[in-house]
Length: 405
Ligand SMILES: Cc1cc2nc3c(=O)[nH]c(=O)nc-3n(C[C@H](O)[C@H](O)[C@H](O)COP(=O)(O)OP(=O)(O)OC[C@H]3O[C@@H](n4cnc5c(N)ncnc54)[C@H](O)[C@@H]3O)c2cc1C
Image (cartoon, rainbow, N blue to C red):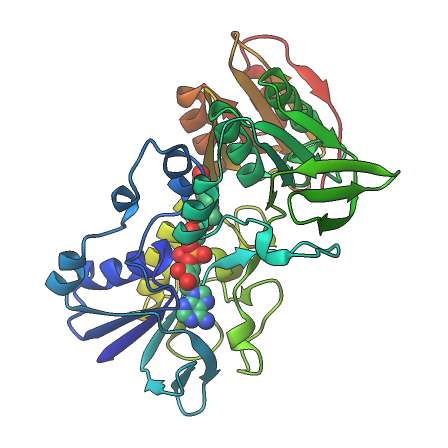
């Protein structure tokens, strides 16, 4: 193989380029991205960049010179519209075509659209790109009322930053608790209390019917004739894989690119990494798509190995972090499909939740407990039983049985 083309120059794409060079690939590497900005990191956008603690330059993944030094050709502002596997060609939005030999698909995900009618959609903020963060930050003016639609991680991180900036914040969520889709109701209640104790109005179990604009303020019309007047609205209703450009290509799509266990996309010399990849994780015996930073780095490394000839299955304990107020939230494993939850609060300000399924430990949420995280990561990797996990707790946990998606 003399040339590898990588579509998507975010953390998965840049990590793939680096892994190619580290593994001794000497051919051409092309890195394409629709975003005209030099590749940057997304996690700080809802934390240090939004709060103003970090200048934007600090989130660059690599300086421009790094790409030159590693002979990686950056094609920024290049949107890829289609893939022709037969001719091994990428079709770009500017009408050009680019041929490839090896292909890494690293197009990640995009912010989901709000499902209800919105009179002035351009007024509603989202937070996926550096430009989004810049625009939102400019509007975080003390005393304003921010309404956040969706109580997932990004919505809650923005709520924490906006409170610290002196805004009035209301979070509206259709589920009964924040984070319920990912972590279930027991942990969701903990997040509810955390935000409420910092002065956020957390409205759960509320559906929004429309968002209108009267020329001065937005009105968020909720079911039951409840209205919220907002100075600004953030839509934080999750992300969807950015795979539209692959429709009709012959690759298998289904909430992401459905890969083989080694991250091959099902066509010769085409691999996938990051938020866009769906694969069968042998550790949990289930198909998953993971929207976390560490997964993007690790999958990129693995996918490059596959491109260069290895056929190892990708097996991983997912990991993510989130910072909200002084809570350092860290999660390893999987919460989806759990049938047991045990909660433990070993000291004030810290919190631990273990998730079990079919008699095994499968996930652990640690708040301000960094050492416990590594312990549970290894335990999930080696298949610790639920009973052993219970024995590992310092105090008698509050144990509930619940079922999540
Ligand atoms: C605000 C925010 C905060 C986050 N915080 C955390 C956190 O605290 N912890 C954590 O673990 N994870 C966090 N994440 C998630 C993490 O950033 C993602 O999992 C990670 O960015 C995924 O990397 P990726 O390279 O797969 O995709 P992405 O980062 O989504 O990048 C995909 C790239 O592909 C480009 N692209 C898409 N389609 C095309 C196309 N057709 N043609 C050309 N280019 C294309 C896009 O412009 C983009 O640059 C956060 C995400 C956001 C948005």
